[in-house]
Image (tube, rainbow, N blue to C red):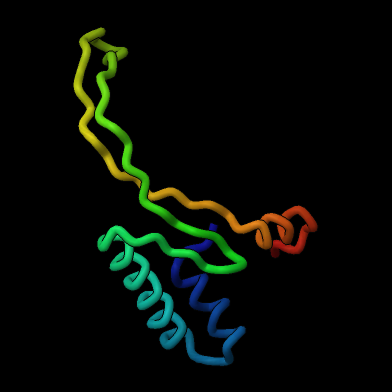
Length: 96
């Protein structure tokens, strides 16, 4: 697993820039993604994948600990789908 700083280090090497500049770009991309999700918009990055918001209906569940029935409200979850291009790269072992 890598964190934001590790990613910034990798990006800075690829772009021949400073880690601070790469970190600024990464944070801007993350903020732009979050803004689009908050606006209920899907995001599609060709060759990488797509994020979309999925609304899950309200339902009744049984609490396994107490056995009581409880209501679960409508929820919204973020769903990611990997692009076929990235899947192919991973299958071929070119993911690293």
